[in-house]
Image 1 (cartoon, rainbow, N blue to C red):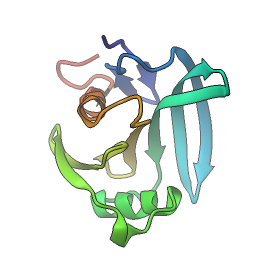
Image 2 (cartoon, rainbow, N blue to C red):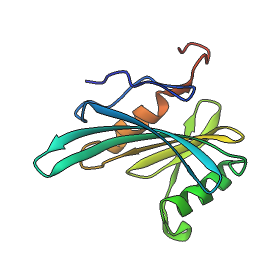
Image 3 (tube, one colour):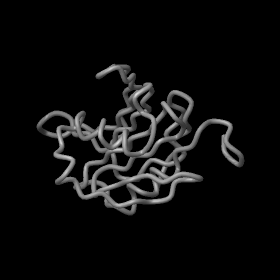
Image 4 (cartoon, one colour):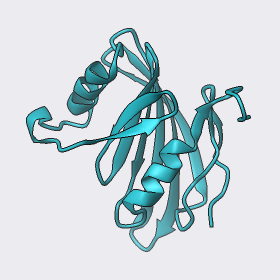
Length: 143
Protein backbone atom coordinates (compact mmCIF):
# COMPACT_ATOMS: atom_id res chain seq x y z
CA UNK A 1 0.00 0.00 0.00
CA UNK A 2 1.34 3.43 -0.92
CA UNK A 3 0.28 6.92 0.07
CA UNK A 4 0.74 10.48 -1.19
CA UNK A 5 3.74 12.35 0.22
CA UNK A 6 2.54 15.89 -0.53
CA UNK A 7 4.42 18.79 -2.09
CA UNK A 8 8.01 19.69 -1.17
CA UNK A 9 9.67 22.81 -2.63
CA UNK A 10 7.80 22.63 -5.93
CA UNK A 11 7.79 18.82 -6.29
CA UNK A 12 4.85 16.51 -5.68
CA UNK A 13 5.83 13.26 -3.97
CA UNK A 14 2.93 11.28 -5.39
CA UNK A 15 3.90 7.98 -3.80
CA UNK A 16 5.45 6.95 -0.50
CA UNK A 17 6.25 3.25 0.00
CA UNK A 18 3.97 1.32 2.30
CA UNK A 19 5.48 0.07 5.52
CA UNK A 20 7.57 3.12 6.35
CA UNK A 21 6.79 5.32 9.30
CA UNK A 22 4.04 7.87 9.38
CA UNK A 23 5.88 10.56 11.34
CA UNK A 24 6.81 13.25 8.80
CA UNK A 25 9.22 16.16 9.32
CA UNK A 26 10.45 18.90 6.99
CA UNK A 27 13.85 20.56 7.24
CA UNK A 28 15.73 23.30 5.40
CA UNK A 29 19.52 23.31 5.27
CA UNK A 30 22.49 24.29 3.14
CA UNK A 31 25.71 22.49 2.36
CA UNK A 32 28.52 23.77 0.10
CA UNK A 33 26.32 26.45 -1.52
CA UNK A 34 23.47 24.02 -2.25
CA UNK A 35 20.14 24.61 -0.48
CA UNK A 36 18.16 21.57 0.66
CA UNK A 37 14.44 21.20 1.33
CA UNK A 38 14.09 17.80 3.01
CA UNK A 39 11.14 15.67 4.04
CA UNK A 40 11.75 12.63 6.27
CA UNK A 41 9.42 9.74 7.14
CA UNK A 42 10.25 7.85 10.32
CA UNK A 43 8.72 5.55 12.89
CA UNK A 44 9.23 5.03 16.58
CA UNK A 45 11.16 1.95 17.66
CA UNK A 46 12.22 0.62 21.04
CA UNK A 47 15.59 2.36 20.47
CA UNK A 48 14.17 5.73 19.38
CA UNK A 49 13.30 6.58 15.79
CA UNK A 50 14.12 4.88 12.50
CA UNK A 51 14.06 6.82 9.23
CA UNK A 52 12.65 4.92 6.26
CA UNK A 53 12.61 7.63 3.57
CA UNK A 54 14.26 10.98 2.86
CA UNK A 55 13.43 13.20 -0.10
CA UNK A 56 15.79 16.13 -0.77
CA UNK A 57 15.05 18.88 -3.27
CA UNK A 58 18.39 20.59 -3.87
CA UNK A 59 19.02 23.97 -5.48
CA UNK A 60 22.41 25.39 -6.34
CA UNK A 61 24.43 26.75 -9.26
CA UNK A 62 26.94 23.90 -9.11
CA UNK A 63 24.24 21.36 -10.03
CA UNK A 64 24.73 21.82 -13.76
CA UNK A 65 24.35 18.26 -15.08
CA UNK A 66 24.08 14.66 -13.87
CA UNK A 67 27.87 14.27 -13.57
CA UNK A 68 28.11 17.41 -11.39
CA UNK A 69 25.21 16.17 -9.27
CA UNK A 70 26.88 12.77 -8.83
CA UNK A 71 30.12 14.48 -7.78
CA UNK A 72 28.28 16.72 -5.31
CA UNK A 73 26.37 13.80 -3.76
CA UNK A 74 29.54 11.71 -3.49
CA UNK A 75 31.04 14.50 -1.40
CA UNK A 76 27.83 15.08 0.58
CA UNK A 77 27.29 11.38 1.38
CA UNK A 78 31.05 10.83 1.87
CA UNK A 79 31.25 8.22 -0.87
CA UNK A 80 34.28 7.36 -2.98
CA UNK A 81 33.13 8.24 -6.52
CA UNK A 82 35.35 5.50 -7.95
CA UNK A 83 33.74 2.90 -5.67
CA UNK A 84 30.09 3.93 -5.99
CA UNK A 85 28.32 1.57 -8.39
CA UNK A 86 25.31 3.37 -9.86
CA UNK A 87 22.83 2.33 -12.52
CA UNK A 88 21.16 4.74 -14.91
CA UNK A 89 17.36 4.92 -15.03
CA UNK A 90 14.99 7.09 -17.10
CA UNK A 91 13.11 9.81 -15.22
CA UNK A 92 10.75 11.67 -17.53
CA UNK A 93 12.78 13.36 -20.23
CA UNK A 94 16.05 12.96 -18.35
CA UNK A 95 18.18 10.23 -16.81
CA UNK A 96 18.94 9.59 -13.19
CA UNK A 97 21.24 7.30 -11.25
CA UNK A 98 20.48 4.85 -8.46
CA UNK A 99 21.91 2.18 -6.19
CA UNK A 100 20.07 0.03 -3.65
CA UNK A 101 19.39 2.88 -1.23
CA UNK A 102 19.07 6.07 -3.25
CA UNK A 103 18.06 7.55 -6.58
CA UNK A 104 18.80 11.01 -7.89
CA UNK A 105 18.34 13.12 -11.00
CA UNK A 106 18.68 16.66 -12.28
CA UNK A 107 15.18 18.11 -12.74
CA UNK A 108 16.59 21.24 -14.39
CA UNK A 109 19.97 22.99 -14.32
CA UNK A 110 20.45 24.03 -10.70
CA UNK A 111 17.62 21.82 -9.37
CA UNK A 112 17.96 18.17 -8.36
CA UNK A 113 16.07 15.56 -6.36
CA UNK A 114 17.58 12.82 -4.17
CA UNK A 115 15.38 10.01 -2.78
CA UNK A 116 16.98 7.87 -0.06
CA UNK A 117 15.52 4.80 1.63
CA UNK A 118 16.46 2.39 4.35
CA UNK A 119 17.06 -0.80 2.29
CA UNK A 120 15.96 -2.91 5.27
CA UNK A 121 12.49 -1.34 4.93
CA UNK A 122 12.25 -0.50 1.22
CA UNK A 123 13.48 -2.59 -1.71
CA UNK A 124 15.00 -1.28 -4.93
CA UNK A 125 11.71 -1.61 -6.82
CA UNK A 126 9.91 0.55 -4.26
CA UNK A 127 12.80 3.03 -4.30
CA UNK A 128 12.52 3.46 -8.07
CA UNK A 129 8.71 3.61 -7.97
CA UNK A 130 8.93 6.36 -5.37
CA UNK A 131 11.59 8.27 -7.34
CA UNK A 132 9.56 8.03 -10.54
CA UNK A 133 6.52 9.36 -8.69
CA UNK A 134 8.29 12.62 -7.77
CA UNK A 135 7.44 15.30 -10.32
CA UNK A 136 7.44 19.09 -10.55
CA UNK A 137 4.12 20.59 -9.49
CA UNK A 138 2.18 21.48 -12.60
CA UNK A 139 3.95 18.99 -14.86
CA UNK A 140 1.58 17.70 -17.57
CA UNK A 141 -0.72 15.04 -16.18
CA UNK A 142 0.48 15.70 -12.65
CA UNK A 143 -0.54 17.91 -9.78
